[in-house]
Length: 308
Image (tube, rainbow, N blue to C red; front, top):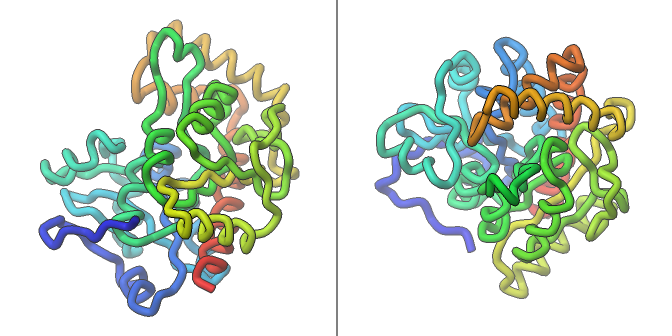
């Protein structure tokens, strides 16, 4: 159940989002770590504007979420989006530290988990991102498991992604999601995708072929009183994918490099993504942008279907 935001919580809605809430228009939440930690300026602002434009074209309103100087922003004005894209040293905030960033008046970019929390508190039911975090390879020794999985189990937001990031242990990630009772639905495919690749080699737990069917599934869950979110895996367009067999070679090289450089904790994912970018000579980033745009498109269609 959506919880109202405390009147004491420093929060700011963009004009566009505030107007959408008043008229009951469909809204799609967007994370901000992809802007501050995903790619350098000006590529990051170009990507952010493109994703927001796609959502508007599909009849929904984009709400990019971030903490700026201690204020939780649900939607950013154009000048705020530009400033965030140029910000250096922004915190990467998840469930554990989003309240810290607000209390200490810091600037922080929201991860999947933190974006879900903010979206639910604002009454936004759909969130489009690139890929979720999950169980890291070697987690049986490191215990490195993303907070995204726990958030999906407890927070009632539909998360549209291109699957779990391929640098993760995808079979273990799916196992944890199943254990936590999170529905995993692949859109229009019986195979679960692997971020840059259309298939992980694993069957999808569930498949639905239309935004309306996804909206109906979520509505039925709410009618049954089932808490928690839903994961919608949306395979990257075929023209933009990097085949799984090829990506595994790049990922193994990046993992070896991370082990050699003793990278750990929150630094692991950005390090691996940056290393893979270098290995693929930028090809991975082009695929990343394509899948984020594709997810924004589907997220908007689901939000519109829910509103109808």
